Length: 280
Length: 202
Image (cartoon, rainbow over all chains, first blue to last red; front, side):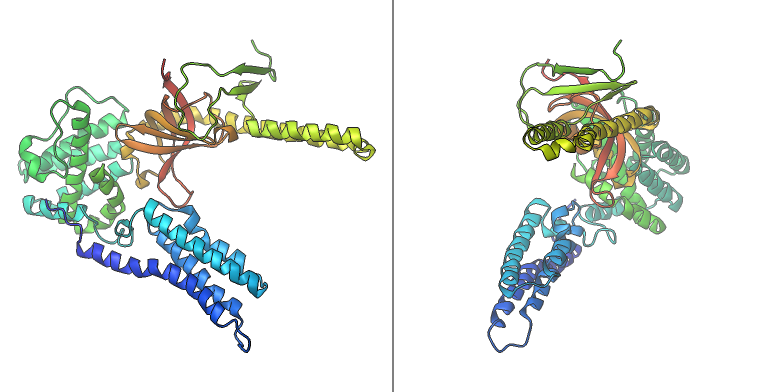
């Protein structure tokens, strides 16, 4: 499984975000500069209108905060503050100082947003419309290895994953059970069968809020090529238990994504959960 | 048996003094409790402090000014409202939470923190973990960061908890998955009950 960090979708997202990030200081300080330039005697333009640069910059900053997975409430609320600060007419000197300080604040907030709430490549600009990495690469890997999955089984895989993500563990177990019945005698992939069995077992355990058992179903070493995460060492029982479920859910996601196009919108709603499993 | 409405004041249990990563002042806390019926009412330190401060203001003003003394007939009830209203609100919220805890206990599933995601918004859940941070406890709106082996999650409570939960306590949290800022934000737990299941450091 290759580690592609410069996939086309990420590059497109990055190329859209950088101009927006640059626009925040450019517009805010640009308004200040224009206000200075046009503040001389003889000008007919009311220089207080250049505060619109700060207003636009705060709207862009709020948008940049909105598209990130972790929301920054401070950046999100800057348009409200810009309206409060600049809607009331005031003296030129007061307005100028206010614009300058506000432009500085917006720039500081932008830097804070990038440092504390993720870099541009982690933004959710494309999330919700297509798969993000590393999920996309993993689905490509699984597509090669599990080629003959029936659409019915793929649909059950999507349902099992979706229900699990929603916390409906009994329904996820039932879907996994139905998939196992569908796959009986066919078995396109031992790893996929094991994945359904793991989801069924652990779904029932979660439904009953039971402790992890001493013996549980897990992937064999042969399945390593199909798995999203490497198998932990044999001695770490709890790690193996959790990793089994993570790998099983991710395998179901990938198998469903590749085979059942009509379930892709459902899978996209659970993409954030799948990425969380991948990265944990 | 304690009579309803009686006041109990006692120092918090000692134990080994832990390195506190919360925003609270690192000192023993005195908890002021009242019991109204079956509900333990815990007014926040802030509301008690406000009452005390305004009582002092009123005393000083009434000693120094005859105009104030003539208005005491309505100033004193207003002063007591500063105490009664927070107590009443706390009683209402704690009794309401006490009523819904059994429902949550019946419906909530014990999950690992990692499994909690946006698709579970509105679902009752139970988690067990270690408290890593505590904020806003003195405001009776405590926020905890609870971590288990699989991850950490914010736990927000909109009333005072039954127990004095501190950093490094191992707790069981019962609550509902909500968005951090109501309609946006990452999933957090709206806590209805947080209980210690092991003593920290003892």
